[in-house]
Amino acid sequence: MKYRLFLALVVGVLVSFLILFRVSATPSAPILSATAAAETETSEAPLRELAQKRGIGIGTSVDMGPFWNDANYRKVLAREFKILVPENAWKFEFVHPTRDRYDFSQVETLIKFAQDNNMEVRGHPLVWHYSLPKWINEGNFSRDELIKILETHVKTVVGRYRGQIPTWDVVNEAINRDGSLRDTIWLRNIGPEYIDMAFQWAHEADPQAKLFYGEYMTEEINQKSDGVYTLVSGLLQRGVPINGVGFQSHLGLSYLPRLDSLRKNFDRFNQLGLEVQFTELDMKIQDGKGSLEKRLAEQAKAYRDLLQACLQAKKCTALITWGFTDRYTWIADVTGEVEAPLIFDPSYHRKPAYNAIKELLSSNGNG
Ligand code: XIL
Image (tube, rainbow, N blue to C red):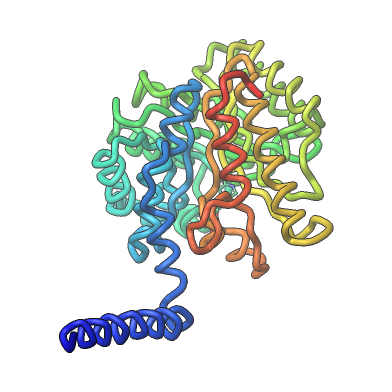
């Protein structure tokens, strides 16, 4: 009897201790890492698996800061995504900081991670007007010198990974809103043929790689996408090797592309024999209307609509987001706004947009 009483007492103390501990421990526990741990461990099929079954690649850009510092970031990245795009590490200023020196260390950290996790790395970008080192911008080089510099850069970077990088963004953002060629250091000093040259050099350096032109605000049929259409048609006519067009798709709830126009746009590029991809998709919500819940639901629908357009297109081969967690997004860095443009929240919880993508990928038809 005494023993039973003792046992009841011990159990009672234990239970109340547990209850007390739970109540008092919950608020002070590190909420972010606790919830993140729960989200990163799941037995459900990841997006990359579902997407593969539907014949498209799902990917994300990866920035070095979070990659190095946040284990949950790496965990979700490896679990959910098949395509890894170095967000900055391959840009001219980082990979080729001085004329005689290349620095491949960051890129190769990412390549190693991708290999370990059965992911594919997408090259981005070889020729861009932005993110150039001082030695280029202030070099006052002659036309011939600049051609040589760009040729060496493209061939060195692409050639180093010959056979390993299935897709490269060769030329990025070369067109203005009105469809004309953007005034860049390359256009000014070399002339419009810098674009043909870049594709040719990239092809010589890795004949197997698929070569893309990338642009923003070209999702719909408009003057800018007409400019891209004219440019790539010209490349094809001249026999310049190009395989696809990337639509960056930095979007917001107040400027979503009209779907009928996007579909027609994708179709005309496909008709040329080119692949299309969403290459940098993100979607701001602060410019939308209504409660947070409503805006997140709108965001989810828009992500789903875009994915559906890709699945229904003749040859849309990838959907790549520019980052994957609202914890780290370039928009916040650039504008200082608190934004929520991606498919995981800052604690790595799946947002409605994630669920919408997942649901469409899991369904049998194209939605
Ligand atoms: C952005 C990165 O996300 C930022 O971290 C960096 O500071 C600037 O570049 N179009 C592109 C991307 O092709 O490379 C850009 O990435 C976003 C716009």
